Image (cartoon, rainbow, N blue to C red; front, side, top):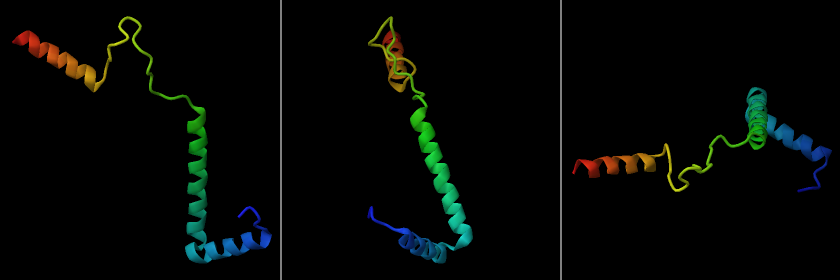
Length: 80
């Protein structure tokens, strides 16, 4: 596949033009360009999730469903 020449590319483009039509082919190219641009941007940006452990209590998980469940179970055990 690495040996595609100019005529082969022209034939492929003509076939795509016949199948999708000029307007949909333009929309397809625009969507593909936006997708590639978004992918590159996401690869450059750092992750938004901070997974740094708590310095005071590294075993404690804060602000998660697990943390809320632990707090609820502690409240229930104090009530009993």
